[in-house]
Image 1: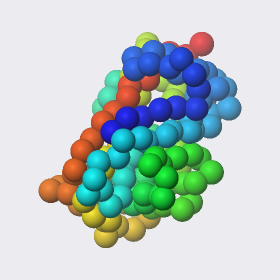
Image 2: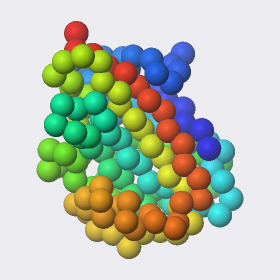
Image 3: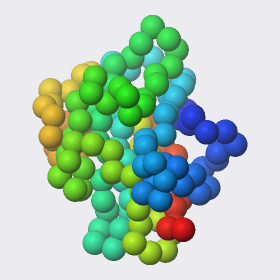
Image 4: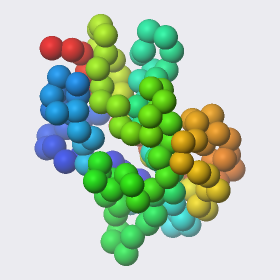
Length: 150
């Protein structure tokens, strides 16, 4: 399984363009998930910042992202309302753009291929999501983006 983005020439562990952060438009970068393993029934996305001063901060939680007839899945801010949104670390069911208070932070985008759709409602916590995914993960992958305030 591979993750591609809507901006070119991006590789793992590079700086995310500021347009996707609080210093820019703060919009969510469109992701394209390719090479989804057979047996996958849904996808889950967790975006977090493990470098936050108060501990890991969750920027986005999405569950029950369905597969399509295409050999890939597109995840964009325009499609969030089609899936089940969890509660980020700011108690919102939304994308929270990277906005580190100091130093360079890592923003980890984790995609999980699951063997079944989860029985979960909007507003779920990361802990509940991980609990429900237990034993259902077919494959997982991630990309890491870096950001430091301008």
